[in-house]
Length: 196
Image 1 (spheres, rainbow, N blue to C red):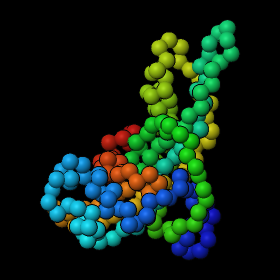
Image 2 (cartoon, rainbow, N blue to C red):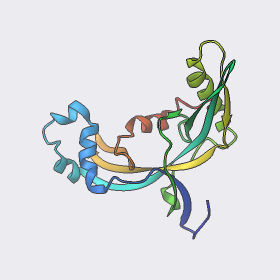
Image 3 (cartoon, rainbow, N blue to C red):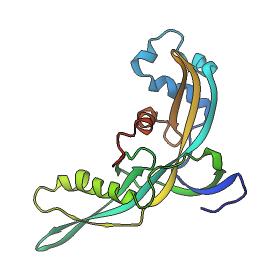
């Protein structure tokens, strides 16, 4: 990551930002589920009027290319590639089903969410994914793991501030897929996935 000016920074962006600001009311309505569908006054135009601010922020995640090496004598070992991710704020971790596209882009520094988990601490989160999510599918002999260095990438999210039933609400929308990230935003605040 290279500094451009005082206010900008080059980052590695995870995925390609495809969701536009005009799509946000429909996505928010969809994320409200059944309660939002049948509530009077919760159509897309009403949601658009209630939005105070919408900006793209960049959430930090660690990703690691991991190859599972399962020995199967007398045959050669089976090698299964996958990507491990660790949310650098909440500690939430798991496996990505597809290899994400990563591009370099310049962004304003104040739009980058600061991370809690550093490069040294992420190692224990990676080992946790390997032992609790990958290895448990192997009943007898546990596989080996070959991994790359952890890489810090930035996931673009729409941060939408709007008027809600109980006052001000903040919705986070994945700027790549349009999926609601409200589940993850609750985990950022609670810290339930952080390892002590």
